[in-house]
Image 1 (cartoon, rainbow, N blue to C red):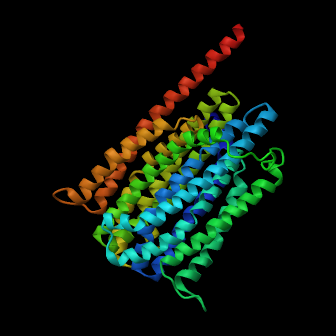
Image 2: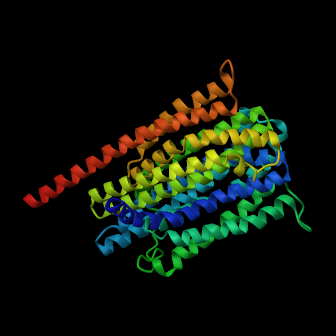
Image 3: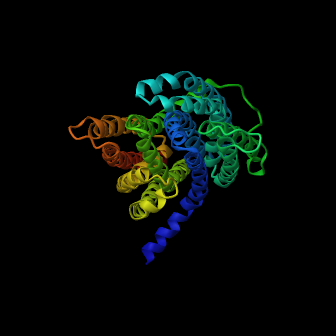
Length: 466
């Protein structure tokens, strides 16, 4: 009983960070769910267009957002400093230079999506009747990418300071606005003609800019930021600091890109199997992504907690934080697996009345339930490693696990074997790739943590001797 009470006590600081982050993640994922639900009402073709379109833009957006996630550990380390003047300067410079970087990569991402969408769909063999609405949907998304990048810079900075509640409030407000906008543009109302699937893109474009402006106003003018004064002594681009952010953030962004693009490439490959299979896969992905928001949010909170402990020069405190975080994630994984396994038909019923689509989606959810354990462990370990500013090895492990193991196996089982399994084969590949990734990342985390403790002990001993 005493051990359980101790576990609860240790978990409180982490949960205080995690719960608002969960609200933010649910809001962002909820926008995708709203797109899927409303597009599904419009028709199977519109749902397929949004599904394929999401598979194209989501990896790119997560690459951009992942780079800006570097602001979280950098800000958390700075926030843990005892020297108030240095703390202010480091936090201020991290945000200012991060905004320069975010605007640049957001514009680059916009042009990439505008230029390469059509050729990519041709290469992946997306059926012709899906291509036109998908391209129109993606054009709207592309023009919103600069706002997405700037929003993520503001978000990562605030979360690094532990200011997770205001970010969550803005994100949930954006979700609330997204619902009527989707209904208006997708289904039409009064003088507004129904746009079908592309209407989801227009609604998202508006939301991207509203959220970025709202979070920017909060960051620059709200009272919690008075001590740091982020607008004070606003510097021109400092390429040394920008390079530091990029060096830490690019591996994070690429690791997220590699992981998420695995799911999205699978969706594009599955597109060759027809609209029903695409729709079933998208429904399964939406539902599993919703439950995954819990361990993902905890991983983001772990980045902050570990970073703050290291900023205080407490390597042992950082170790205890990530151990506690992985224990909590294991509990969440057990619950999530049960929800997906035992209630699969129930959840699918919210998305479609098509019996063929529902039957396949319910079966795919069983596979999604199986990988909850490895998925929760790998995302938790990756979040803790970001707190240690250890990102490059994480990228290498992720590439090996997903692109050299998970995707080839899934492609073979799904399309290339003597008895192709279709979508089920790809989900088996996902399970194997996630499991390998979890094992390797947890081993890496243990080694980095132990090395940090030893280095700090040696430095302390040298100071005492001197």
